[in-house]
Amino acid sequence: MKILITTEFYFPIVTGVATVIRNQCDVLRSLGHEVRILVIGPERKTYFEDNIYHIKASRVRFYPDSYNTFFFHDPIVKKVIAWKPDIVHSNGEFFSMVFARRIVKELSCPLIHTCHTDFPTYGKNYIKNQKVWDWFIGRVVRSRLKTVDCIISPSSKNREMLRGYGIQKPFELLPSGIDISKFTQDFPENERQRMRKDFSFTPENFVFVSICRLAAEKNIKETIDHFAALSPVQPLARLLIVGGGAERENLESQVKALGLESVIKFSGPIEPSQVWKYYRLADSFVSSSVSETQPMIAIEAISSGLPLLFRKDPSLEFSLEEGLNGFSFCNEEEFVRYATALVSDKELWNRFHAYTLATAKKFCREVWGEHLLALYETYLDKQKKKRM
Image 1 (spheres, rainbow, N blue to C red):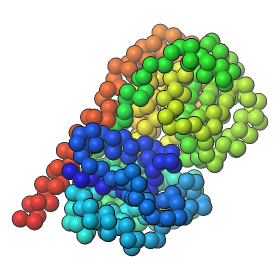
Image 2 (spheres, rainbow, N blue to C red):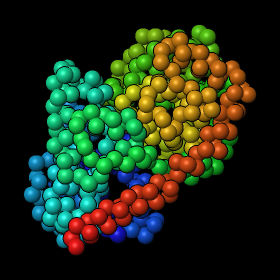
Image 3 (tube, one colour):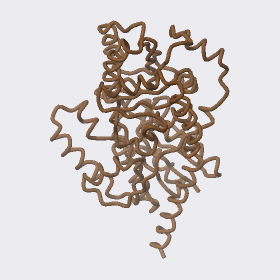
Image 4 (tube, rainbow, N blue to C red):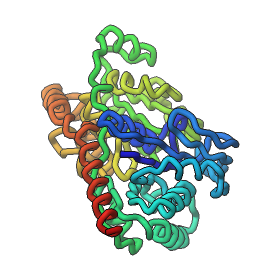
């Protein structure tokens, strides 16, 4: 099967969407299928390299690491059409969707779409008039998705958001999978302790880690505020914030203002190939984000054996099992209570740790890949029947 994946984001830009697409490509290729990607940017030229069609683009100023393009009739599109993909799987509702719809129209092949964005939450962080944003984005998304055959939602939160926009399409509730082996590889304890020492963490410290792009919608500010309340209660607790982004300077200033420079550390941007080590050097994973459609970081943390401490959100339905692999909090008091339990109760931590390792296999990308293929084949069969 020839599969074309379209997207607004892909490496070297590190995002959750890029990680999902890389896992998708890897597993579909491992199952014997030919996969190519069409992505917007990241350069001001169009080119084809390593099975990726890059559409020339320019940066979106108000949103970091984003690109726009109006070269919808770029000659490279004819080359994509000449390749004749059997199915197109889109992963963005904006510029890349224009290309997906054109290719599908030309080839009369199925169009499957995955929605990765919590639009209302993004609006709260970047748009002043929320009512105008909700009206505008609902209209745009409804228009863009009117020609898709099926929508994959990684969580019911995402599906209900789209239904709220008046989108009446077949939905498939399918959480994304990951390469679990990357997070379970051997990590010698002496190397782990050396990395911890690089951040002035001792073997006695209990380290919470947050791994994400440092952007407003990730709500890292709240995690830092809550940690300020935790620190006097649990003086051995530490927080490592991993990643780069536009909010780093503001967050570092916040930590300094709270006098927590010895408690909260920043790693800065890291190579994607090294991310697994930053999970494994920690004792628990923490996040205050409510902007996720499906938090891949939670699945990666589970695969690394880390108990979870997450802000309560419907997107966690497939990952966080309350009281089994972690806790969800709604406010500072709950954060401090649950964090204290993880830090001070070794038996509890061991139980959560064992449960995460035992249940991680359900998130493996091979299972996810088989579900994707079954979905593709369903819509290819429907397309064939239409032609008969």
